[in-house]
Amino acid sequence: MVAMERMNRSSRIFVAGHRGLVGSAIMRRLNAEGYAHVLTATREQLDLRDQAAVNYWFKANQPEFVLLVAGTVGGILANSTRPAEFLYDNMMIHATTVHAAHLFKVKRLLYLGSSCIYPRDCPQPMREEYLLSGPLESTNAPYALAKIAGIKLCESYRTQFGCDFISAMPTNLYGPHDNFDLTSSHVLPALIRKFHDARSAQSANVEIWGSGTPRREFLHVDDLADACLFLMNRYDESTHINVGTGHDLSIRELAETVRDIVYPEAGLVFDSTKPDGTPRKLLDVSRLHRLGWRHQTELVDGIRTTYRWFLEHPREGHNADTPGVVTAH
Ligand code: GFB
Image (tube, rainbow, N blue to C red; front, side):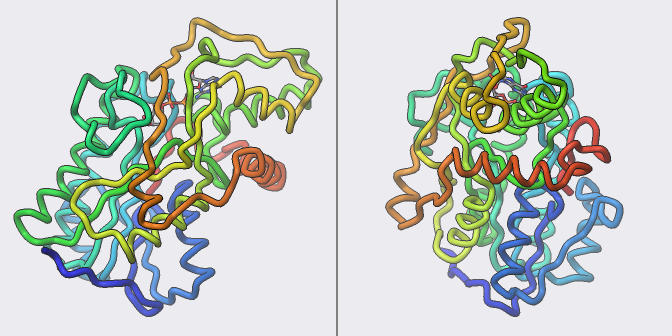
């Protein structure tokens, strides 16, 4: 049994991946709550794939707590076309950071995975114990394998060395600082961008990839940041824990919802040459609910505020600086 240490306002907390969608939400939350020693490193300052550099950084900065939310991430197309980067970058980032956290005696580490770790044809909703019970979805198997390796790293360092490392598996995320680049983004920011661009150009139709029948669950990233802090102070088991809303909808329903908010006059056209990916991935969140955590932001409200953020941040929203795959560290 590993004794659990809780973060306090003067703890040295490393947010690995602080510029990404998740990392920036965690930073907003830690800052708002008055955590005074939040440590960060940009990609230019620290290549998280380099074990020697990561060890050096941990030795110099002595973090007590780590939120490991860095990684190379992207939507279905980026995952299918850049499998080597998704596998290599993520395996390395997870391994170096977990290993350095062990070497330099970090008190607690939270590792963030993804709901794509579960088998393609997993029974729904997906319970934590369904991990590794069947084949993965081919469009994101390399990414999922890296994420599964991360879970197993945390479990193994806990078993062998007594490290207090925990894992959380969030569902599909969205919110401020998302990637709105159409070649690498996930579906929700892509739809905001597409309907917005169609409205600007007064186009009649917006193209939706695939059949529109796959079902997805979406969690606002501020809710995820809240869950991360909750779990850092409350969750004490070696098994990973799901983080989601417990509700899903079809891609067609999602597209209609975004259309009604951004450009109600638009028609939908489905492009069947693009992949559907996993038919459904709804998380079973009963373990998290039993601990007392629930999401706050309903999807329609979250899409409205994210669209407002997109309008207020044209450079970031249109992703001028980061074409292609986003590396969140
Ligand atoms: O969000 P998304 O790219 O990834 O796509 P996944 C979800 C669904 O939306 C797929 C459809 O069925 C897409 O075909 N879709 C419709 C679109 N229009 C669009 C569009 O314009 N852009 C995008 N991107 N999709 C990812 C994984 O899977 O989910 C990652 O590849 C990760 O590994 C992430 O797990 C959370 O939900 O299919």
